Picture 1 (spheres, rainbow, N blue to C red):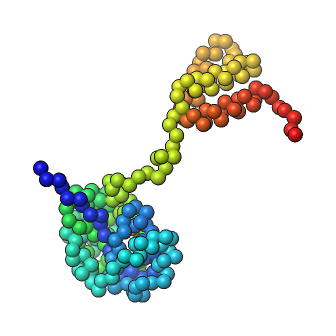
Picture 2 (picture 1 turned 90 degrees about the horizontal axis):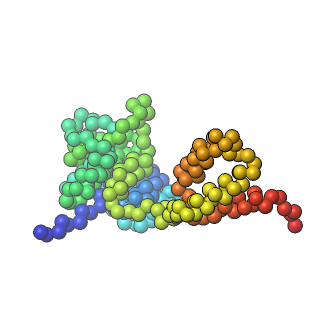
Picture 3 (picture 1 turned 90 degrees about the vertical axis):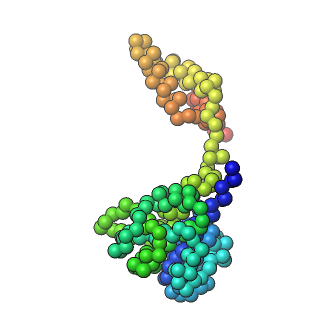
Length: 245
């Protein structure tokens, strides 16, 4: 059985963007989640825009590769699936998807896909939405439904990235939990310090108190260095105060 061709990442299309800063921020949001293909339709202040670079905060590769088109139809001519982002249907009958549903469709359907975003103040016009296969929108406060351009881009880029095989940056930094032997040593050391202080009195409650203490100490999932640090604390308490040099 032939292997399925790899589905390309979606392109981000900004229609008549007004501010270079917003284009830069959108590029930054794209690159955060692995998207690099940016297409601009009739940017108000032309392109390139000197205000975009600083706002991109290092996402220069996205800006350098950005393409400019006169019309939205030209910008999405090679795309089989076009998703218009808008909080309203604007009188156009189209399937309405959440960002998560749109991302699943992009990963599932062969051919190029495009996420289309409108100008900062007005959003996409009805004629723009008419070019799309579906509308993407999010549940939002009806009394304040205004997202800035970068926020809208990051919502869709994030949902797409969840199934794009990107690595979780902090996963490799997490240390494995300490082995039970180390936890037992820490608990025994703490109990040894608490016993002379009468912490486990009365005797009738000692078992329950020890059990509660054990539950507290085993709940966090201590790693090796945390256990060693805590045992250092307990050792210091056992030795008592010492003279400072």
